[in-house]
Amino acid sequence: MAYEYGRGAEMLLARRYLGLERGEMATVLRVREQSYQRWENGRDAIPDGAWKDVDALYARFDQQVEALIAAVPPTGEDPHPVRVWRGRSPEQPFPGLWQRIVGEARRREPRITPVYPDDDE
Image (cartoon, rainbow, N blue to C red; front, side, top):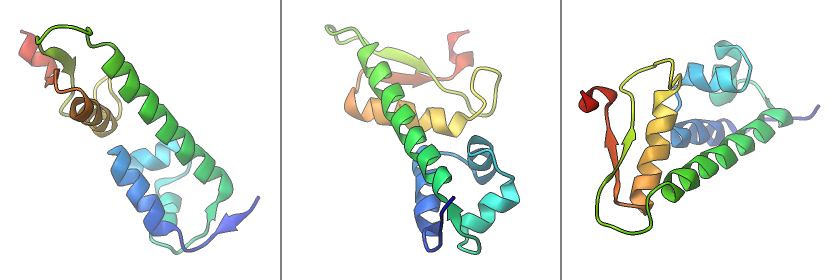
């Protein structure tokens, strides 16, 4: 397994782009938070396999954005509500990631309207 130094800032930007907190990114990458923190701070080299996982996260992010956009009816001016959560929930263990996905989908399709689950009540 190869390791790379000097890409900690790139890992930080990937995490921020995806809307994940440090501990969440560590969970997704299946490493201890302390190990992840050392990668991001540039103290430890990042294994190549971690970058494959980051690429998979980007691909899944793009797929989910496209799926949200595709779910909007092709005609009409009505808003298309999509639930977002303020914090962790059984439906959304990584709310920041989901918020980023919804935000990106909304940027491309303005009829997407984020709503909190309690707005339904």
